[in-house]
Length: 238
Image 1 (cartoon, rainbow, N blue to C red):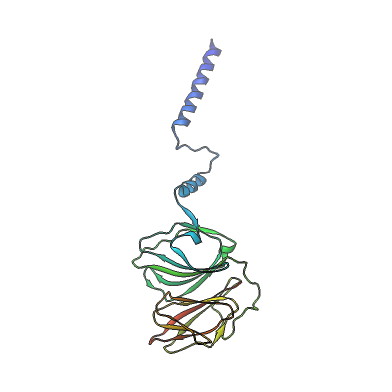
Image 2 (cartoon, one colour):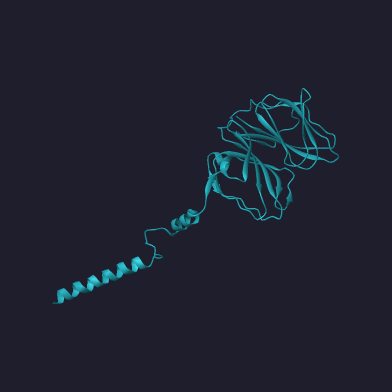
């Protein structure tokens, strides 16, 4: 009789354990890391897209593996979670706090260390960045250096070369030519002329305006206004 009693008691204990495990979904197994559960919960309901598919990162020009994006995030808005897996060059036009005057920053690490994140703007103004994305392998030598530049580049790496210039009223650059696709970005308010060697001119008249130049195209940049103006000349190296 004692053997029968012990078996019933053991069975009751086992049933109670199974009942508690099924009823309490908040209990974690000792073998399940709590961090892994938290990460899964963080991304379960969020939309994750590639950078080039994120609607606030609008592609405005493309040449092969080079993409020019006009990034605009309204005050109070947050982008989708998006994946960066290509080198990128950022020319900031406005932060949420006001004009940024065209600082240029490169993040080549994305090409070999992808990142997933979102971009928020607390405001009160628009966040705007002109971004050059390079999905290529980059260049390992300097045989593609441009002609006609008066200064050394502010940024130079296998994917990008960038010059940030401040032109006084009426000042113009020398005629220049680049072996790579190049985009001229106006970083501050004013009026800028980008003029080809044959005289054909494109006028830029506000911060964030840009002009794309094909490899080998000879041009100069002139400040047509009465105040200094910031211009970034950005190459996508291929």
